[in-house]
Image 1: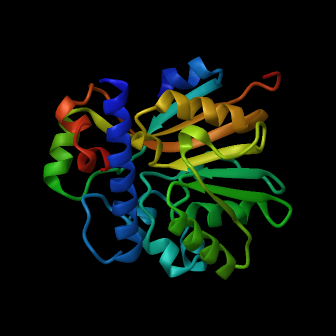
Image 2: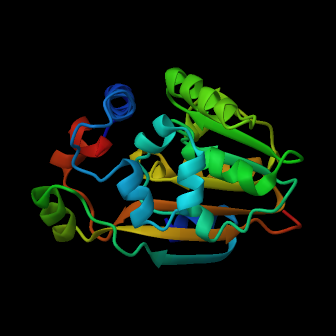
Length: 50
Length: 201
């Protein structure tokens, strides 16, 4: 997603992991961890000249 | 994947997404594999006052994965687009920030969720537009919004590049996004990609 935002023309792209996010079911959580799944917050700006 | 196969899978996925999130809205007491409702919103730092003032149905149906308001820095008078607005909680919270001079627009795949969101917003004394549509083809003109927020929705798309390009298009020059979503560090297996139930999760 980070790269997609930059490639689309967004500037000042920032991301941070959402603390505390997890799946309710342990089996889903285990699968998510195996694939490196996490919740993130992303902010970015469209340049004024765009 | 062939284009025809992807189109077919996307159609099935659309139905599964509608089914799953309608189930959350219609039966919020049920247990899902993700946290939802007030518990989830509080976990992500939603202000108790926001939740107390929002209609119970909007809070109970919340199925986000974070708090896009935390860094959105919404200002009075701004136009906000909530991409994948669901039952309307994030739009209602946004309306608190932009006030009566602002404008809150929701877009959701499911027309019945738009009906719910509008009703929930009206119950709080705010106005929210909601348009049925896909995030890959946002049904709004260029340069409409000052801010795009979204919460746990973009990951559902097979065409994320197109979604990102659409967010860019509908933003005014100098506009910004504040989104929370699920990302994966590894390529998902084809068995997951081909399973609409897992993808919709």
